Length: 69
Image 1 (cartoon, rainbow, N blue to C red):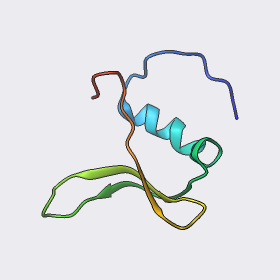
Image 2: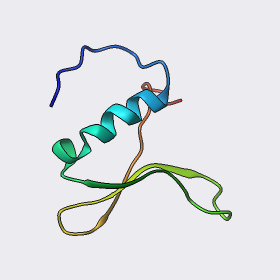
Image 3: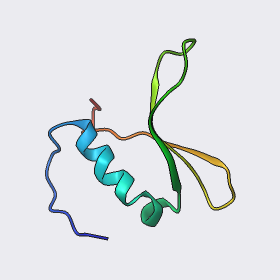
Image 4: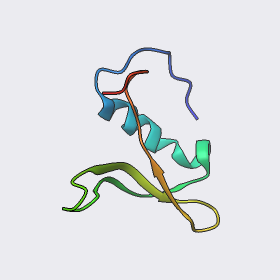
C-alpha cells in the first residue's frame, strides 16, 4: 500500500479510484465492477461492486467529504 498525504479530493471519482486500487488490501474484497447501474427501477449507481472472501456481494460507496458529493 502507498501512503497518501491527506487532502480533500477534487471529485468523488478521485476518491473512488484510489479506494478501488487498494480495496483488496483494505477490505479483503475482490473488485468486480465500477460505476454499476442499479437498473431502471431505482435509477442509481453503485460506486464499486465486489465479492468478499466468502463470495458474498459487497457494495462500496465512496464520498468526497463528510457531507458527501
